[in-house]
Image 1 (tube, rainbow, N blue to C red):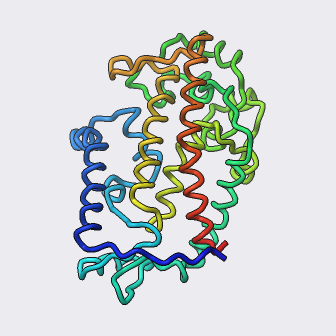
Image 2 (image 1 turned 180 degrees about the vertical axis):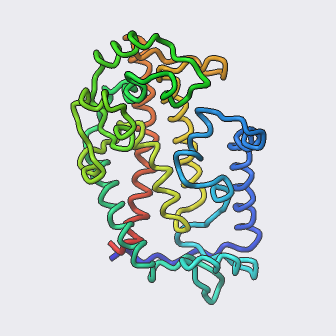
Length: 294
């Protein structure tokens, strides 16, 4: 059973200041995205975190205090609209003793998944090949980001894919490979075997820490959610800079992973993301284990 920790009382002025700081940070992070969305203008990098992932901007802006605090003041009762909160003699706090059964089950799975990922050796030899495999042997009409040109002619791009590492371990990247590209991958991950392949060097595994953070809401502290969001945003930029798309007119210089120098740059960035993801993964694993009652 998890260790019992005495909660800390946050005065009204204290937690409202934290809440306002969270909302301001979100506004600064996604202001450009919201302005473009209002104009109906798409962006292949910054829209991804709201198109691929299910958390909408308004919910990202929603602050939760996380574990081991009690929110003082009558205003704190607004948090009781979520069943994961309870009223106490001092105020309002997250209820750790009675999570919904489905939340406990999911948290148990996630705890095991995050632990397995953390304990597996990190691999840094994929060099962003997955983005190339997603456009391999496609017609111009099939390419996802048609508003942006590719850096290579179709046959040249295909040759790069065919000579590439072909070692993607992340199912949610692999499932977007073109049918012709899938047999070129040495690994054949499935939804059921995700936990058997996931490893902490993978860009997408570290990007997905954001997904796990919001899926644990409202248990997740707002600061942890935003740290995961910022990591995911930074990874997405590198992901697309290392892709076959030419995004220079958007201000993104390509990471030319088709060259040795480009692969060295990509690997160093990948290692940095893995280091940033490690403490976030550990915190999420601890949070999931606590919800699961481990």
